[in-house]
Image (tube, rainbow, N blue to C red; front, side, top):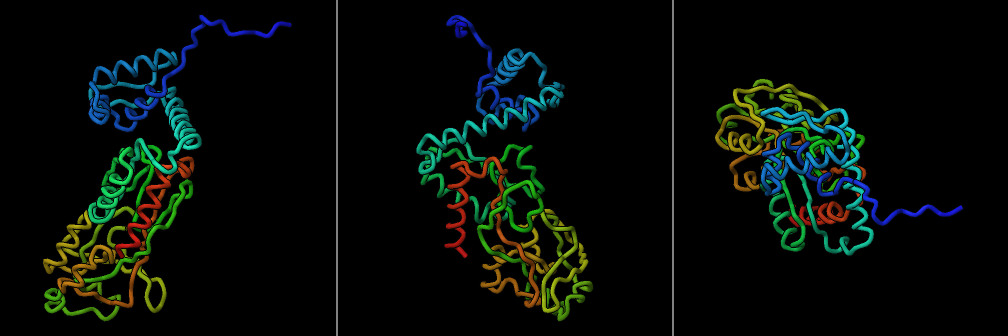
Amino acid sequence: MKTARLRSDLKVSRPLLEDLSLFCVVVRKQSFAASALELGVSNALVSKRIAILEKTLQVRLLHRTTRRVSLTDHGSVVHQWAQRILEDVDQLEDAISDKGSSPRGLLRLCTSSGFGRNRVSPAMSALAREYPELEIQLELLDRPVDLIAEGFHLDIRVGQVEESHLIARRIAENSRILCASPAYLERNGTPQELTELLQHECIVIRERDQDFGRWKLTGPQGPEVVRVSGALSTNNGELVHQWAIDDHGIILRSIWDVGPSLAEGRLVRVLPEYSQEADVWAIYPTRLGMTANVRVCVQFLENWLALRK
């Protein structure tokens, strides 16, 4: 029996990696125009490459409207496989190249706005200087993030990690503390018991891992929960910090955030025997856990934060 041979003139149609990558961007951005803007190409090119991918796979991938695009059932399946294929290619490159010592290519990470501006952004500036072939996209988001669905490789989070399907590595110790301005405390008195917070103006914030107005703190009696309220609230930690300096009330903020204001006397710690654990975590999808870009970034951030406590 003769061994079957592939004819040299036989053309086997397969989707291009570049088209799968572009397709994943379109799914994440839910818009051809927004995808074109991120990739630095024309809307026409994005539309053309998606059409070619659909023709190659012989299925319709996207529902198109004037405002957004969404996945068809076939598109959802292709998207899952495209992500897996692109991640496998990244790991293949890691395995056969020197990428472990010289990371390159795209790294998309996110974190909260205050921590991002004050800590992560300077670290990424230094990382970019050390690894010039690394393309860093940092997004500051004060909301819960779905790493896989939104296409992020890494989330730098202050506080608790609830998602069991993700990998979490603690990269810095941190805690949240209660504080207020000297003028506010002089005007309203300094609370001596946790329950006295109920009679105070507390500036509440809704961040990724915090229940709105529900402060869980650890003190002499162990964990305790107090419901607080006040005239001012926001979803931005930097505003909360400034409002406390402006004498509006008591806040619960990370030491990394309020440390300079405490040292300068603009804020004073309240109920110092109470605090809330808020360590800094690097969080990433399981399949991306061993990629060089993620590995190098996490180690760099861990060292960076340790030197700047």
